[in-house]
Length: 166
Image (cartoon, rainbow, N blue to C red; front, top):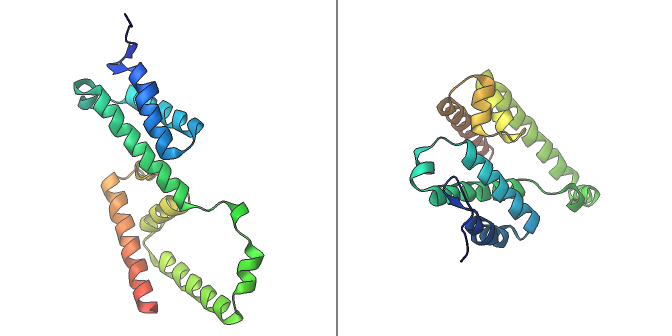
């Protein structure tokens, strides 16, 4: 007779077999899968959401899914520096293309500079410093809703700039 190893309503045998295997298939890295599962268990442990008590395994699965999405976004957001041959990129561009790119960047910087200060701070923290909306809200002492509104405002201004350029 096998005993079930449970913690806070979670069958740990299930978590470290089925869930870990599912994460591993999506990340293609056993160590990263273990890190995500560990992070999910930590989030689960500190959560006070009612679903934690009502359906702990489903709630843990939801946390894992969110972490997998975050992992995917982070991985696809940046290219490793060693994958970029900057000299080759520069040599492939004509002087006209370089000038045009610099002009676009200059105009984009002006658009960002013209944003209201809080909006500009939110945009920078989210897109450059890679902070989560919740972290930005805490740091700037504003609501998550305001963070979202500032991001939308910034993106609308940038989109208007892009449409004006094209």
